[in-house]
Image 1 (cartoon, rainbow, N blue to C red):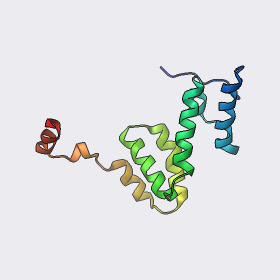
Image 2: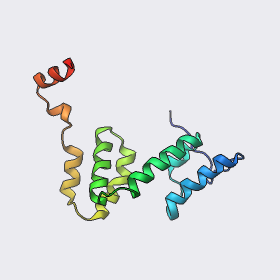
Image 3: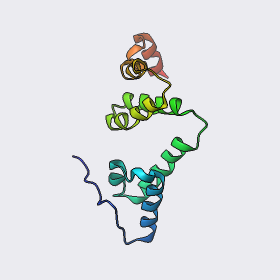
Image 4: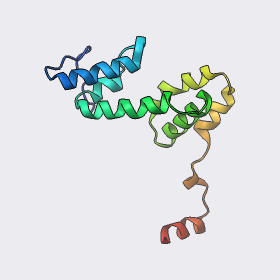
Length: 127
């Protein structure tokens, strides 16, 4: 079941919740609220935490855009989070440091669990 989005723009009677909407809108800038925001805003404190966490990852680290987006895209692939992949792969492409073949490798590279030998998996499971 898919969670319906809150109306856009969201209007909350609680000033604390409305302040959260303003913070999310500020971080999103001219692109406006995204579908993810509109789903998370069913629980404004959750949206606020997500906004703060992702804002820090996106704009307050020392990682280059290509490394940051490579990590985000790889995690999206491993979790089969295709919405995140669709949002972040274009950002990674725009960073201009990877060829299209590199993006394909991010998608097709086996996960560690797919490449571990059975003995290694058994040892890890015993600890």
